[in-house]
Each structure stands twice: as C-alpha cells, then as structure tokens.
Length: 262
Length: 253
Ligand SMILES: Nc1ncnc2c1ncn2[C@@H]1O[C@H](COP(=O)(O)OP(=O)(O)OP(=O)(O)O)[C@@H](O)[C@H]1O
Ligand SMILES: [Mg+2]
Image: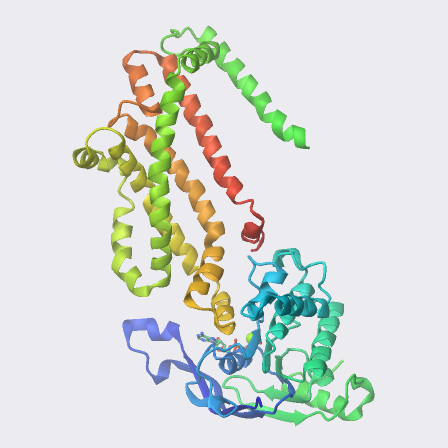
C-alpha cells in the first residue's frame, strides 16, 4: 500500500549570489535553509492539502516526494523504501502546465499508457479524456485549449497511468473563479473515485477546507510544519455552516499572517 | 484581405520598374553604365531563351543545396550533443566560438588550395558558412528547453531514446526552423561570392563574366534572379514552420 513518510527532512539550497562572490567554495554560510526538520506521514488514500506562504518550500517538498530532487538530510520513504528518483507510480501535476506542447491531448494522455497493447490502450485513453470532459478536444494541441482545459487534460494524463500517488502543485492557480471551482470539483470527484493518496499544494485556504481529509500549514522559511489537522467531515461540505471549519479557517488565516478576515 | 496581400506588392513592383526606367532615361547616364528596366527585362528574356540563366541558377542551387544540407545533417546532431552533454560542450564550444566569427570568405585561399577548382571549394565555403550557425542555434535551443519537460520525461519513465525523440527533437524544431531560414540566407549570400572565385558557372560567375564583358544589363539580371531565388528559399523554409505540431513554438510566450 502506498504510505509516504517524510523523516527528519531538511533541504537547503546554495545561495549562488553569495557563493559566487570572490570564487570561494560553497560553505555552510552560503546555504539557505528552506525546509527545516519536516516529519510527516501520509496514509494510503489520504487527500492532503498543503498551505504555506509563498516561497516557503511547498513545491520543493513535493518535488522531493516525486523524486525530482533529494533532501539535504533526512529521507522520503514510499512503502518503506527511500525515493531514489522519479517513477511513474507517483505522478506530478505541475504548477505551470506540464503537458508537452508538441503533442495533442490524446498523445499526452497516451504517454502514461504507451506500453499497453492496443485495444485496451485506446479504450483507457478515451475513458480518461471523457472523464475530464475533453472528448472532441483529443486532437487539439495544448495551445489551443483554455487554462482550465489544460489542467483537466493534465489530470487525465496523470490518472491514465493509474499511479499510487498523485502530487499536484497548485492545480488551480491562474484559473478564473468558476473554472477554479470546476477543476476543484473534478479533483475531489476523481479522488472519491480512485481513492489514491493525493497531495495538493494550494494558496487558497478554502480549497483546503473544502477538499482535504487533512490540512497541513507550513511556516515561512526556514519552514516547519505549523499545523497538521485531520478534517473528519464528509464531502461535499459547507464550510460556512460548519463552525469548527470556520474557526479553523480563522486560525489558519491568522497563522499565515492575515489577522482579519473579511 | 487576401487579394490585397497578393496584389499590393506587385503594384509597388510596377512603380519601381517605371521609376527605374524614367530615371535612366532622364539621368543622362549611358545605357552601358545604368541600363533601364526595359532593357534589363529584355536581356533577361534573352538569357532565359538561350539557357544561360537556367544553367547558372541550377549550378548555384546545386552547390547551396549540397553545402547547406551537409551543414544541417552534421550541425544539428552536433548541436544536440553540445546542448545535452556537458563534457562535449566544454571540449568543443571554445573551438566553435573561435571559428564562428571568421568570415567564410577568409577561407577562400585555403579552400582553393585544398579542393582545387570547381564545385568542391564552393560547396566547402557554403558548408562553413552554414555549419556554425546551425550548431550554435541548435545547442542554444537544446539548452533552453524547459526543465519541466525533462521532469515529465522522468516521471513517465522515458528511455534515453524517448527523451531524444519525444522531448529534445520536438522541443527544438521551432528554433531550428528559424535557424534554417537564417542560415540558408547566409548560404545564398556566400555562394555568389564563392562563385566569383573558384568556378566557371553559377550566378556569381555570371555576374563576374558579365562585368568583364561590360554587360551591366546581364549583371542586373543576375542580381534580380539572386533576389528572387532568395525569396523562394525563404518561403520554402518558412512553410516548414507551418506544420501544425510546431505551431506552439510561434504562439507560446
Ligand atoms: N533550485 C533552486 N536553487 C536555489 N534555491 C531554490 C531552488 N528551488 C527553490 N529554491 C528556493 O527555495 C524556496 C522555496 O521554493 P519553492 O518553489 O518550494 O516555494 P513554494 O512554497 O512552492 O512557493 P510558491 O507558493 O510561490 O510556489 C524559495 O525561496 C526558492 O528561492
Ligand atoms: Mg510552488
């Protein structure tokens, strides 16, 4: 089963501006600590929303879970095995579109199932494209789609792989209000349907409260886990009519440095 | 809209030819020094009829196609290697950057010494003129591929071959097509110069030969044909960019 553990993870980057000066070798003084001692465990099938101020290292954390980058110290384990690189059982949905622009929607979705034999392959691709309501757009190129359609296409591509883990970096950013809600609904339905571990970074507190089985709030750099709560409420949920969620909402707003809520 | 695009340039052309004719008539210059448009067009008919123009145009095009194709066939793969393999870049980039600013025309003496007279030295010069721009543009294109695409490749377990065929090559095609367009223009400039020295045919040779015979009308005919062929080459390269799967390169960013 797909259980993800982040253990004593620290991540620092070398500050190139300072490291370059005078040609001195990179030493500890030139490193910026981004993630400071993160310990997290994600259960099989959990839908986890991660919040935090901009630049605190949310993308960096996701990238390490996906195997694109590695911790400076500490480790990330999936099913008790350290992550040594990117694998197609954890699919990453990129903050800025990760669709390959020279391939049609169909060809992009096909990437994840390209080794499967044909009758089944065609059917799978068709199914997932239909699931995100992009039938009739299979043969369009990404630049011919709107922002929301791009996200949905990337979602279809990720789902077609049938991964154990879905990692989404701000899947709703840059979308207009209605499209944001639609894509969010899509993600929730998709999770309800496949029940796979899903990590979602978002800037929107309401996203987290509406979607999450669990919400994690990270502090500013160097970043630590500031809040980690389970949300034992069914979906769809009405945040406004759930006093506990409203209280949590105020608390998170306060944590992120906004002291009054309009 | 459509007819305007095709008709308006010809109106300009007509007035230029008219103005040219009028200027030569009233300038008082000798016809031998500055022939008018009617005289030049007549000479053009003459050169078309006796086959001279076709023969020399074909000769020039032949050299350009061979030299340019060789440069593309060798330069694009080398550019990809330089863009992908750090060691290759460290080894070869300084040499390429050093050779690149040396005008192909500076190679004329060596080219003639090494390859003698005829097509080979001319082809060699065209190759030199096209090779460096192709290598450099290709490697720059490879280096500017968004890292996201390589992460997608890793995430979907691409093999090395797949990274090359599904990421690198399609990602650089728009920039390579632009490079082809610019490079064929350079190659076409160089062939005329090369043919003034090393060979006995081609449009460059036609100009030189006409000058020796003091036939400025023939010189102008050759110039006009060079211009027209240049336009055609550019048109051919540009239409490569109209393939649908490269459209993203024109529209994004
Ligand atoms: N490759 C890198 N080299 C140096 N510093 C980096 C690198 N990647 C990220 N950083 C730094 O790490 C910090 C965290 O970056 P990250 O992209 O993870 O933030 P984020 O929380 O996702 O922000 P946002 O919400 O704006 O997307 C930033 O300060 C950034 O400057
Ligand atoms: Mg981010």
